[in-house]
Length: 149
Length: 149
Image (tube, rainbow over all chains, first blue to last red; front, side, top):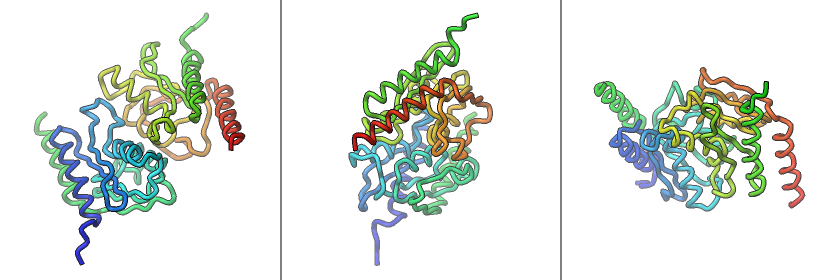
């Protein structure tokens, strides 16, 4: 049976957001938030464009999703993000009580798992969906960045 | 010798921000960011008003300070905040590489120390400045809140 709205489908949308960040010369991380198989928010990293360390993809998506829903809590929502969230984003996800977090590539240096940040106890986590293309985009970005220097 | 611009002076400004949050029926946390003895940013908790878990006082102050400076990094700045930062705010402070964090009251349940969040290794931390009035404002808020229920 074909399931059009699976984890890969939504992660591909997050990857499109990451590609938009790449095109702006931003570290290519993208995110979408889904409720009832519908994308209600999306965002990509804009820390350079906005000169603001808080402008991670997830933070923008959380703000947008809350605005769409009209409530602070995202219990019935799923975040798809191309890179494992950092401390800040995991801390925001904790407060949002989001239902599920799905991330693609791991961040063994600055990711929330290595840093020991706590998500809400009820939040489910799934990782590794489309890991390869999401990690490759990051690598391409840093290779290009170094080449420009 | 009288030193007008000491930690208490700036924490009192953060407390004024917390009082503004109290008056809006928001959990009363306030923050200011100081560079060269000058307040360059301030903020108070607006999570209810903006329906957004990311709208903590510190997050708004970081965004405003970066905008004022025209740079993402706050290495020569000091944050004054009336309550110990949470995971999210400590994570944002980590990325900002802020020089010094001064907080008033501890948050033994949700504060970054209990949660194990890491600040930047070069960030200095000072705590307990005006702890009593800042903690009392929080207690008053929750007593009033419970009374309303």
